[in-house]
Length: 145
Picture 1: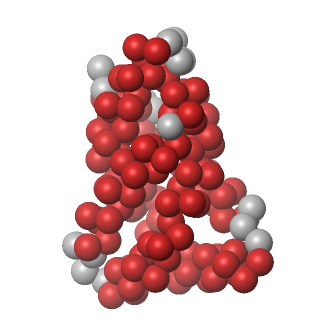
Picture 2: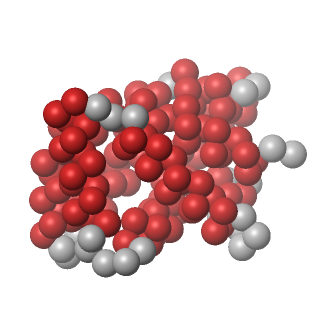
Picture 3: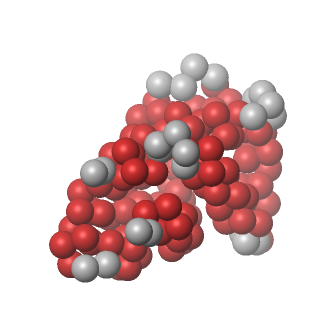
């Protein structure tokens, strides 16, 4: 069973989305300095696109994100600890996730979304790599037997 099937079943989907949104908020809160202020401002602008925009986007991209992570997850299962494997392979994990968001941003109809993403894309990998342990915890919460 792939991550999408396991994590997005009807009994878990809303909880996974909520936990991912909370993880994003916590990651943003941990940012400091000028780059942190810029990220927080950009995120506030995206939240202002329409009420519930961030949870909507998370819900839309999670299936593709989990599909993109499936090969890494499967390797981790073979090695015995998929959560630790995601953490140990943060760069590969970040690349897989950014491939999904790159495609999504490229096709975004709203200029504010596309423009904001393009402005921060250069530093995105570092931020996504920093978030991998927290994402791994979310995944672990819903994949434990």
